[in-house]
Image 1 (cartoon, rainbow, N blue to C red):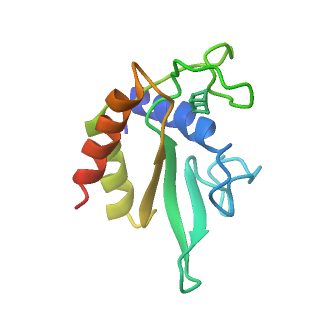
Image 2 (cartoon, helix red, strand yellow):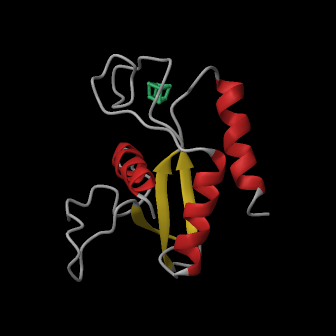
Length: 130
Ligand code: SF4
């Protein structure tokens, strides 16, 4: 993973952690390379049959044209911004999957340009995994 992708991953995994969809979303453990530390962007959730699975949990982008008061990605918030390309998300996910780090992808996004433009990109990513 090159430095540019690593930096995007750090920003966009951090921005995604506020979405409480995973059991480890609120984990405060840092990834300093030791055993037992939560990896950057990897969270855990449960399947219908109770199996615990690891997901890569990221935003496509934390740029957003909206300003929802509760949201860390709101446009008026002074945070570092980043955006993955469709190919970058696909490559990153497949690399993590092949290494057995994850079993799935949790993907969300801020809205860039408009909702249709953003959703089109999310769907292009998902279609790679059909
Ligand atoms: S539209 Fe979504 S990402 Fe954008 S500010 Fe509102 S809640 Fe956050």
